[in-house]
Length: 399
Image (tube, rainbow, N blue to C red; front, side):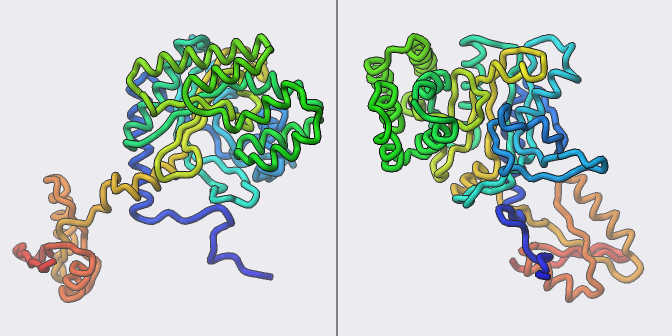
């Protein structure tokens, strides 16, 4: 039997030094933005009952989840999504809390990505959920929080707006089964024009089919909405387009300019999205680092109906971009290596503590000889070695 003890599972990796620092820096920056805007941090269990994530609720296929069983044989999953556990929390432990409820989280999610396509099966995700608030004000609050979060981390980003209601109204008119409809959605999401056209060519060329054909190309400014309106005769779809226009125009008043675009091809997998949807992109990452939207029907599954909107940010992807751009503090090297003479080990440890109290980073030497300590300090780039004995002396390492 092959031994896998020296490798990590496919789709995962170890994080070292600067990567850990970058990841925690991004998490802290996002958490600061969220808390300053009145959101409160929560954490949910890393494992949940599968019942919480059935595909008709979560939109996540069962084969994409990492599964196990508990001591009673009940099917469990490693958390593949953060919104559903928070919805469970709100409808149980926070059921008597006054709405709106503002929550944020920073936790890992685990989901199998077939073929990976550069994606990881383990992602640190940070985001917010605004529960019990409907209407434009709540939508703008959430989207502008997303804007502030990204702008806090990177200078170049783009927010794209769409509407789940618009796509759903068109998709219902396609003369296909659920499996084919899902395949079409995937092709739109990936903007695979050729494969999408091949599928649609086999169908009767109705107005809905022609509109679906155009969706991957309908991104840009308000002209996108103008074109879509001329091709649409569904009242609900038209109303959803006008709402996107209203949100877009309001965001323009913030001076965001080219940072906000309209993309009617935003057709995220999670079926719980009910209205406005949005994604965030940053320079240096091919995949969206932020995905969010309104999900007013999700809490119906817990017999506690409430309007809700939120988003999640891929912290790992954002941290990788910030590292490439040099926007993460470098790994901190100790200022002083403290080495003790024989019999003065405790005095050296106490002296290291006094350095920390003075704002100086001290590392306690675990070497037997001074020569080993100095050699180590040079290798690590530590400029000074403090030698603690009856007196304290200092050696300059010359680095």
